[in-house]
Length: 395
Image 1 (tube, helix red, strand yellow):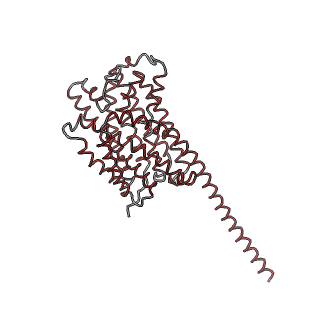
Image 2 (spheres, helix red, strand yellow):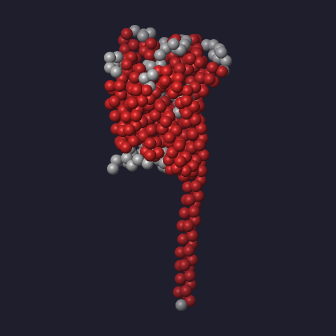
Image 3 (spheres, one colour):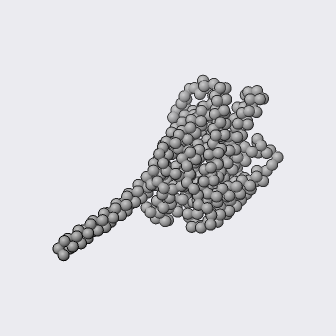
C-alpha cells in the first residue's frame, strides 16, 4: 500500500501559492499582453491580478465552508458521481495542457540559456519521471519542496525587481490609456489561461491543515506574488517603453541584464536562473499531482502509480511528437483551450461554491438529526429511570 499523504501546513500552502503565482506570469505574460495593450499592459496586469486575487479568496472561502472534506465527496454529494467526474475531468484537461505549455516555455529557456547543444527531449524524460515519482509520493512531497525553495525564489525575485526598477524610466509609461479602454479589456480577457494556477488548491480539499489565520497567510502569499509581478511588468516598460518584439522565453530579463556592466549582468542572470528553475520545478510537480489526483478519482484507481506512469508517457509523447509544431500549438490548441480556461476560471468555481454551500447545509442537517437522536435517547433514558424510581417507591 502507498503511504497516505499528510496534511499540508499553512506555511506550505502560502509557499505553494506564491511560487505558482510568479512563474509564467512574470516572464511570459508581460510580452503577450504587449501585443494588444502596448504600454498599458501594466494596467491590464493590475486588473487581471485583482480578479485573480478575488477568485483566490473565493477558493479559500469554499474551503472554509467544509474544512477537512474532500472536494470530490462534496461534488459527489451534491451533483452526483457523473457531475463530480466532469468537474475533475475539466480541471485535469486544463492542468494537462498547462504542463505542456510550461514544458514549451521551459524548453526555450533551457535551450537558449543553459543547454544550447542538448535536445530538450533528453532531459524531458527525467523531468517527467521525477514528476511521476512526486505524484506517487503524495501532496506532502510537493508541499515540503515548496517550503524549502520559497526563500531562494523570494530572494531572487526581490533582487530582480530592485535591479530592474533602478534602471527604469517611468515617463515611458505615459500617456496612460492612449488608445482607450478596449485594448486593456481585450488583453484581460485573453489572459485567463495564464491565471488560475491556484485552482490546484481545489484539489487539495481535505489535505490542508485547517487552523487560525489560514486564509490570511495564503492570501498574503498570493498578494506578495501579485506585487512582484506588477512591479516586474512596470519595470519592463520603464526600461523599453514596449516589449512587444521581445521573445517570451526568458529573454526579457536577459535583454534587461545587458543594460548594465558584465558583472551586474552575470549576477542578475544567476538570480534569474534560480528563480525560474526552482519555481518551474514546483509548478510542474503541482500540476502533475493535480492531473494525477483527478485521474485517480475519475478512473477509481487504487494506487497513484497506476495513473502517474501512463500520464507521464502521454505527456512525453505529446510534447515531443505533436506540440513541436508551433502552428498547431499557437493557433489550434489555444483557440479552444482559452474557452476551457475561461470556464475553469469563472464558471467552475461558482458551481463548486454552490455545491459547497449545499453540502455544508446537508452536513449541518445530518449533525442536527444526530443531535436530536442523542437528545431523544437521553430523554428516553431519563424517563425510564424516573419510571423505575416511581415503581420502586410504590413497591
